[in-house]
Length: 193
Image 1 (spheres, rainbow, N blue to C red):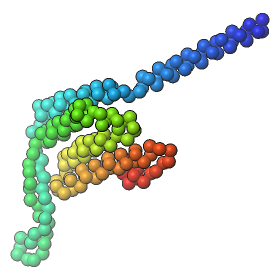
Image 2: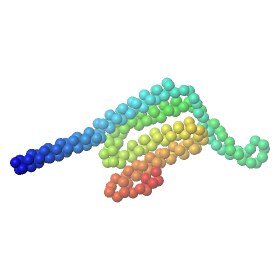
Image 3: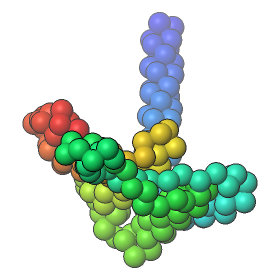
């Protein structure tokens, strides 16, 4: 009787371990990113960004912002002392800038789903997608530049510096991804970003 109990316990244990393995395999395959899922995601992101561009033009108010360029000039009292001066370069409605960022993001997503699809998928499979970092860096740089502009930064050089630093961070993140692909871990690019 003891032998029969041991055999039935062994059968139950094997059945449970087989069920656990099957569950783990189904979880791994359900979470795997496939080329078809990437394609669908990029198409969805492109269409969603175009919808957001249209909605931002329709629903956001007609508030405007102006950007300026700083330079030094003689003071107005006739002296030889130089002082800061500002020249307004452009005045633009915020909603059109936001719509432009959404359109640029939509173009990038649709490019990743069509013309750049093979390069993008190869980079994702290789775990070093420089294209993804570069395109998202451009979008994030433009978004942060607009946010800074709305927040009160009006100087063109400062706005471009903000955008350039965000793009540099994205490129350094790609370099970090590339450096840490192997077994050796390097944190130089991560620290710089």
